Picture 1 (tube, each protein chain N blue to C red):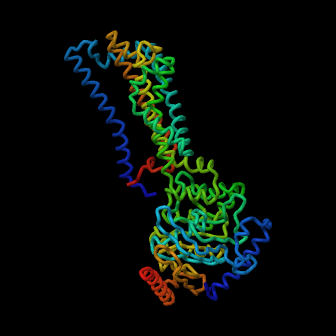
Picture 2: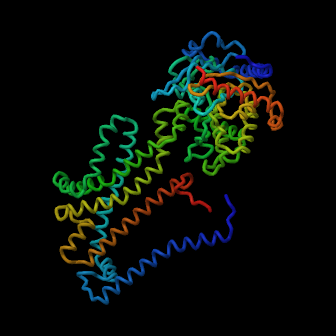
Length: 303
Length: 272
């Protein structure tokens, strides 16, 4: 699991950001979650993973093996893409990280800061493939939902407004989801994921259903958000081009049962913009990632 | 939204006028035809009264008929409210506990598929007539609410359920913030059916109760007028029942519209 130079630099700057946050919040007493973290994830080490999956396997009740021996370290502040063909278990991996699905084998270790809070809910933002908004609630009410469920309602108005402003939907608080375009619905969904200010943002092919122009724009906006908010992003996609454009590190997965085939660092400094899309560098990376993806698919035939 | 062209606006207005005027025109034509058939065929009023006679009976017998209408409407309203509470409540209970659902759902179905006319005489043996009538109306009306609410509670976006889980929502929050609002269009659909069925149930039960019952509802008036060959009054009572049914239907449609108009597909007028 190597990490390229620029990416490592990005990590270091983020650790500073996290320290600043930590001063503001009272130090929590060690919880039982702490013991789950193995020694190699010691929180004092710079760049220690926020979450580490170790040989995680998932077999569904119907016998389908979605994941097998899947290991992944997510480091603070990084933008990592999980790339693989449809049905390779990348969404399952994301759901396991989110705690929505239990692994059938292997372990997940969280860094101390990410230990489960009093409510049992982890501090995670999740963006689904569909906008997944409540159609009966306004945009503001949809974004307020996580705060409401976590009992943080008193801080809600300011936080909701701030989250909406961040995704460029400041004037749409009172609109209903049906009045929004597909891209705006997805922005609402992202605002909802950000409203609790989670350290870790999990995104499950969030832009797959959008048209290309909207997708490009949201790609750029997502990168800007990632840079300004210093979040850690795990981004599931089946698009080579999207993963190269966005990520610092691409984890290429094999077809079912999903496991890590290889990892590729995209050593291109952020901020990246539309010029990167047409650069020779981008084309070269895209080719390398495509080849890796093809090799990953081919690797299954050979036992 | 799209810019309305003047032509579209005019067409929409014409459309609305037609929707109101055409049924009225059909009613008027039907009334005239009815009147002419009675007049030209010289049909005696004890066989078929003309529309004018029915209306004048409605006025002259208003004291009796309005009292009966009040009785039937009270039964209908009580049955509807009990059906709404019972249907939604039972569906929520089924949704919260699978074991309760497995135990009770078959009996809810049996209650629904057994013809109410066959149950009514039995109920009249064991219950006070007024209570028996109410029970009949309730049995007929509650099942659509139960079935629709159950469908609604089971048709929830799985990703939204996951989202609620992600933020540690309690069962109560999932029920009130997610399941019930998501099921609302289904519940309202069930209530719309139940409104009409409460009236039907009340009428059927009153007829089954006959002279053994309290003997004051509109359905009883119809039976009684039949015995006395007071056909104009029969028609007048029937007319009142229809009007009551129409009012119930529109009241529930209005409720549904008011609750769903901001967000649900069913309440949205598409601009073409």
